[in-house]
Length: 360
Length: 260
Image 1 (cartoon, rainbow over the protein chains, first blue to last red):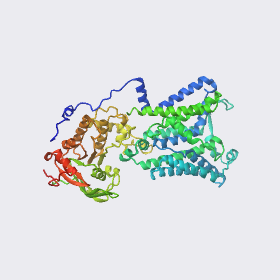
Image 2: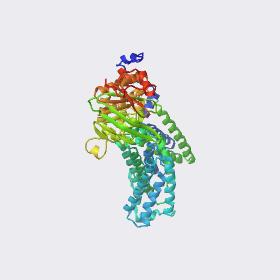
Image 3: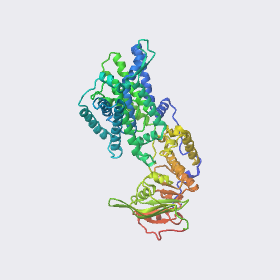
Image 4: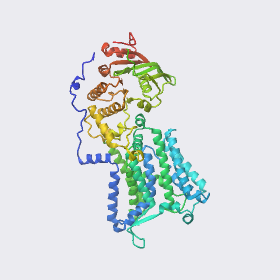
């Protein structure tokens, strides 16, 4: 230590002292902010519960019944499934604008392979799922290997896939009755089971297989994201890809797997779409893009990646469903639904920014 | 010196277009020592370190670890060989917990079906290990191993990064500017951490611009200039002004190596 005036010797001696201490501010707001930081799905959960109670009070039994509440589930099943796919991509700080297009093309392929080529139904369904996975992998390859921005990539593939969808299907709809008669498996997700219905099969809670699939999907993905290394890598890649790379995460592989899985889930959504609308229509599902992103954002998942939980996206989809059914039962103009959803989106992003301040 | 270097670089060359970042550079790290690498900005320190840690593949030259030739094409390969690097950016995911970050890329899975089929992480084991490593290095101020890294102070983050490297780096630990972003008190803590790690017998490569810190902890100082090793000096025989003079080219060292 030649040539210094030992300016650091003062701190050198006090070795036992803590490097930094936390004087935690225990005000209610701070604690709430901290709770949100650790459990980001809390906000949409509260909003969901509050809005159910609110509409329940305003409308009464017509809304607050097992039938109406499970109707909401049926109405959001598609958005819920696609939002699960969208969540994975957004967690990696990307965005997938092609979800709606992949959903529709997959459903068209499942239908046309049966009715145009006479393939066995299970094989046609497998083909549809395969195409979804391949298209997702294509997105992933363009994003991870070619290093193109996800927004641009999926903006492009959205147009390409949608155009392919119309060209291939020749804009032709396969009618519900035909499917019912010849390939009922395509409508598999429309099967229902009821709890608490009367002997005429009316009232009570009605669950379609699509709803069950949506809930199981969210549970499985929530497990994968929290409890497996792959899930941790998805978060790490979204948080800071360079840091993830340096700490030994296979960033490229993780990204491709996420986009591929997103495509596959969308293909399942395409199958569920046939169940939902009964027919195979190349013009359906157009609004799934915006709806899925809306659900994800309201669900408290950060568009900047690495933050949020998939359960939040399900809550986000349900909030939209509660608002649209509630407002309709109130007899309000449908535009009010969009009005409130717009407000919710902005509030959700503001809350996200506020939660991030915990770090600062 | 009779001892074989644990890590040896010979004739390393790396070009970026027309720029020669490493110009036939040699490098030696001996067991159990702290070797500081100093050099002006643009001298090629970072490229040298990246070549050793696998982040950059040198165009020419050879690297030997414990006498065996190694070729790293990815940081993970260097890690697998026992070379851990603490990057200046720390390479941590701010939103994830301390335990998650320590095990990033080498997670432990539960034994049995839960781990092999359901791929479930063994959180209790990872948390226990992380807590032990932090305690070993005296980072007891961190209370909750599950708190997000972004809620830690700069010194604590550095501490976690060093603990991660120390926990897994079996042969060599590389520290890139570990005190650059820290206050006086926190730097002090990190320097103690470095000496702690050294006392476990793991050799350390320390890249730093901070001459007092370098002269305090380093056993030898590798002065890097214009893409190559200018000389290796022992801090007790030189002043900080000498070192700065060598690395900026104001003075030419008498010998390339000092033995005493």
